[in-house]
Image (cartoon, helix red, strand yellow):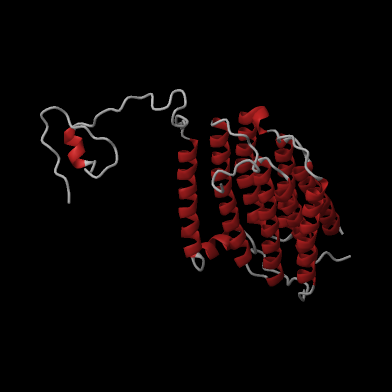
Length: 101
Length: 213
């Protein structure tokens, strides 16, 4: 069996689906952030797989940028979670509807 | 042959740990599972001859991001636990169907693309030198934009993390308990415009502030 690039891309698609399922079903903002991390990382895997397929480094550079975006997202997201916890707000994304109402 | 064995092992580890993240009811266990997932992905990167990215993955994610995650989870303690609700079964089923549909679509789209066997790459492919040269020449704008993004995120993290008194509703116990401190007129004239909505009361004997038309 030859493991081609398509297998890596397939794994990345499955990981993306798992992360999406987590975003759909979980309520804790912490776990939501973790699920988003899974999705971003699966995209990174696809980018790097295609970089290997095409023999170009551009995809890897793009993946590095995605990594920086993910790190920034975690900083801001965790800051929000800590700020919510300090105000004794329930950590439940279904009850955080102040902006909508 | 070793390549295939490593791929299958990393694939099982990646998918299993991702399921662990999503299905575990304890956020701490979710974060620990994500570390495993990231390690498996770093293995994938090595298999795809992206050496620098694998190192960056381990350093940036396992080293920095996940430590912060674990710190915050430990800081929140029991507060971080998932609120217990009786979620209707159809919601979970609908989420499963929607996520499965996305996966099916992705697999269908990706399988219909023509793959040729990945070309042999030069020895330095994916090294720090290779990635860095691209970053500092062709993708310089992306590099600068990334640095600005990181700066903004750092400032945002500091602003969000600063301890401030919680806002209170009007009429609630303790609302507006701090008395209003009049601003000295010397500062008023410089900093605060007369059109400000704060009740500015100039000190005794100070010249009347000019009211703009």
